[in-house]
Image 1 (tube, rainbow, N blue to C red):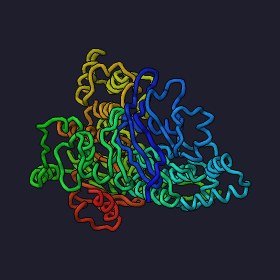
Image 2 (tube, rainbow, N blue to C red):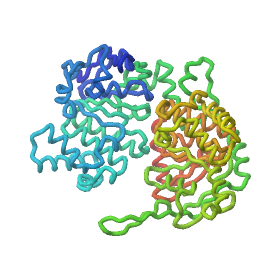
Image 3 (cartoon, one colour):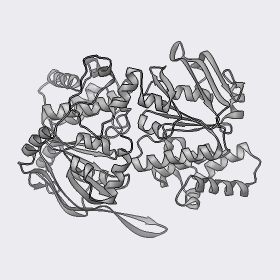
Length: 557
């Protein structure tokens, strides 16, 4: 029975230097209770959580008002030494990016052992047994292998399980999980949520679960707190917040995720819900039918003919091979959006790289406008590089941090001899920045001066500046907040209509793919197992694997 306050936060305000970034935040977490905290980047979720553990930089950050009580003890003004007595042992945290949270030069077992050694008097042998037991508990497929593995030798989902094992190593009273499922595919995401919930119940912990995705929070939370621009917008039981939201922002978050029941011309955004005149327009079957008749009456722009890609590697002195892509045949039509779906490791990104001619196939061929892309002369290859562009998954990592945005985009024009002068290229870039929803002042800014959503708009601008015929979107919205994701998906659709692009939309999110795509191709273990019109694949799947993927998102709609 939930009857004791484990954590009580009252009127908390946090300032960096003189700027308040969190204002008047109040909430409680009872023993054995899960509080889901939802909001987009910059809403104050992580800042609030980091203050609970005393992890904000003391030179620039301070609590400007309010109180934090943990287990009846006032910890608001704890010193670093005092926080060390509770951090990791009594309050613990699962960080968002497992590769950043783990030391790349230490074996995973040693990293978890270090936590146990710091907080217990166990012997070296007992600590090792405890770590292996924890790895079994978090359902790592081979605990002993994971104990001796370095982080880079594990998959994303496995690394996240190691981080969870570190967080629960000494059975904390409160576990903070900060975006623990971001950018993981739906299957692994579900496994991580289920794991956290079972561990929370087994150990009787309080759990503060932070996410930008209300669907994920709905699977785990008893109560939900919605934050926006450092303030609490809505706070209550999960049922009330999800089924009867009171604030425009909460309604917008719920509506921004593409529905599996209907397809809108444009996904609702926060600004739409602030307007009383907003009315969503639904795409009818007749509308889609007319559009598809036009698209599929033409010859394909790209043809994949039994494409196979084999990677070779050595393990314990033995040479092994894996077929990342296995005899895939596919036709992609001008003006079509093809959704390429599958879990991590299924081969979809490898297939995207083959289409971009960044990898050579082991077998098979890919034809663009009827000609093999692997047998082009220099002039033809330059034209192909212009015609087929890529929008990357990580908007920050794919931009040069030392180059201003205008300079980076102008360089693309200069390489392809577009624009006769610096002024002409400036005008082209400025007009394009406006097309993707950025102002002219963006021209002279560096990447770090933009938000994640704005950086992805810059990446989109870079991909379309040469007016390509085909654009490969490789998980291009997977790391974005739901509200920002809706804006970027709307933008992609607007640009497609304006410039008549063909999209290859690579994603693990079937709800997003269904919304965006004319047709869908499902991949499993390197093979193309199902292909068809997106609504037909979604409502009448043939393969069990497809049914499993669809079942995960249907349960949330």
